[in-house]
Image (cartoon, rainbow over all chains, first blue to last red):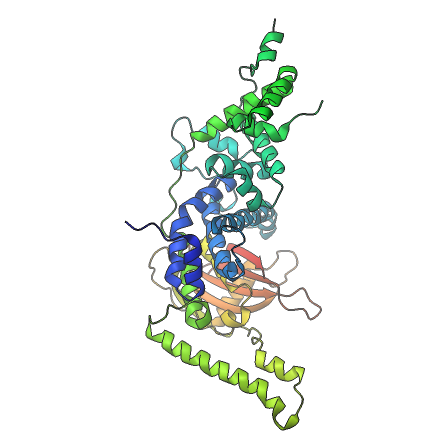
Length: 198
Length: 262
């Protein structure tokens, strides 16, 4: 079986006029981008909207992609920006809708829509708690711990220093645990700490 | 006391080099705050490991793929595979003619030693025509959802001339299901309906912006009128916002709205 065609080759083919190559890119990354957006935004409909925006942005900006970074890094940056844009829009929308004076379906008022895939025992708390983690920490956390992305790559996606990424991931993990109601665990027990205990 | 926050993530990952790990452990020996945080971070990391991957809807991204094909159809430089469909050959011929006209436009001003002018070059560059006001209703057999409405706005962004110049051209959006079109609504009734739905209750002011496209379709199964507006910041500046308003064509109530910045 032939190895899969690299993303960069599909990009090259698309820029030469092969729209099938663009479709392959979409199919290849749809699942990953959707899960990124789902965990960052916390709502399946918003995630689907952000994915649509992501791929439309990718389509529009692909000619600006110069290959300085891997395509996946660049695409994740576009996806994170789409999530930020949608998140900002959702924060503004309740006021606009109230001004309209009309009732809208609850699902469009920003109320959390249950993600049935996450309701199995033992996962709901983590998924629900993730929504309470501050957005900047949440994005870094999702990329690191759910997408297994290296800190160096996350730094490129977010365009921040790597030390900032590490700090955000750590703060995000702590915030997640606290949001889950974990206030204290067995204390870490490095040698000196143990010795200091009575 | 300073805390090694930037090292704690790597420490929890078990990815620190020996020297850094030893330094963190020395710090943890005397810092209760960091010991607690490391314990919490480990709990958070473990909790995330149990979060499953959710299946993405299979049609996700279809709007972008459709848009890529649409652009390939209207812009031979942006997408068609060599030797594929017949229209590509025509598109190639059209591109050749356009290139020839471009060369003529560049060369003509030099004929007879006439100086090349900025205006000549500008004409050759052929700026897009300004968007035309809507004058008719497009009927689409499409059931929009919020994503589809936003795709309509997003795909229109930055190409007002191409998309809005013709009301006959349907922008591809996700089609949730085949639907039966309602009785055709007149342009005047559609505009009145949009005005009624989105008129501010206090100000009695109709939706601002230039209405460049009116679509009769459905929104989440409800017969609907979609209005696409271009909003300009004023002072003669070009439009920088695309707004899509969606109203029920049955009672002219608001169904949804969205906007994107160009």
